[in-house]
Image (tube, rainbow, N blue to C red; front, side, top):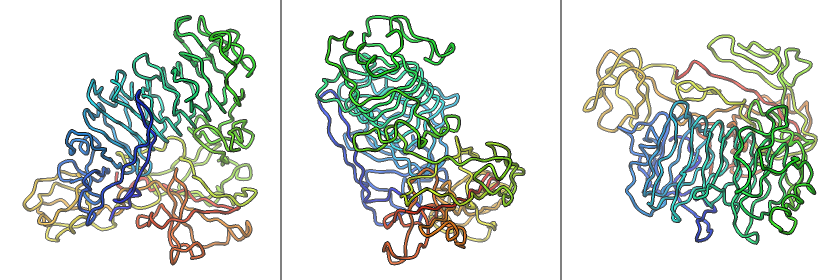
Length: 555
């Protein structure tokens, strides 16, 4: 069975809406008898899958998102597309007259370099689109520019990087990071509806357009804006938000559209007709807002200051301990899409960094860089990290924009079995394979070229030809690291002999003997056999991390 987190029986809930109101949407993945049966309202997609031979089940997924969408009929049913780890290069995905929730089941990237737009404009047809947990990068446009009242789009927990234009509609925009965009807007007059915009981070956005829902219904709070031009279409009330190097416009009929970012030209650029001088304090912002709209002073609980991200260059938007966004929210938590995090430094001189360079294998280490020396397994271990007190670990961030090989993430585990299978030996039904050396012909099936990935189907387990196949052992593969932790002492953490395999970018969880919190750890959530239904959080004061890259497997 493939190690999916979103299994049949799993339910997901989102806040969505349109001009008629706002309401929760809940979808439950239908139960199935086995892992080779497709749920009636869901489909699985993975890099080892195939649109031609897959059926959308966990063990026989489709190979593309569009292939999964095409398997559903037109109608009002809300269907769920679950996408396994890896990089998917798809454009103009057509969801017209269909309603979908897309779930990233792990670390999933939609790569748009050279592909232009990501989604087709649905026109006047009913359409709901919810995207959760994806990295979306290098597209010209994501979302629908012109929508009817019955259409809406929601984004949650996504990273949009180098996407020039992002459109959404009056729905949930929560926990996202938007970096390097020309325009973010909302349908019709292109404004984002502020009703459900919360816990987002906006960095280097040339024009963020915020809409005009009545103040009493605003739920636009806990956001960070850094180096953005922000336009408001009416009197507004952002709450518990942080601004740094931002320009403001409160009257869309005056002034010009921005031509640059605020930090351009020596941090002096202000578009013509926008608030000048640029507000750098809350009283100045409130005064400009009141003058424009003759409105009561708004922006309660907002601040101005550098959010102190750990590393914009590595797309690590966790907050440093000194960040003013820390404890800014009314519940005493952080604002923005990421929590407070500790940055670990790679340094050429081991004593100056957080890693044990002397124990690293196959790596050339310099300040802020650990580069593969050869195309073979490499790893490096951190020193024991003192978190200051017992903390529940939330995630270990990706190492910047993690590289991929042919759509697969390089990680700790081998993705291929050590031995090959030649003609004359039958394959195992529902296992996945890759063809090597030469083409093969599946009995009762088609001829498969070198490099083809496929899932063996009952009745087509024998093959002929001079090629060989190798079993894919990790499905869908998860980019992972290894972890040790302790609440006893630094020495106790270092002395532990067993590492726990954990998935990057997700909350570290473990399985325990007897499924009790006192049971010994049996595996972490980066293991291919992890039981996500019985997961326990990790709490500790001292942690140690080992990062490995299995780069030349499944090339």
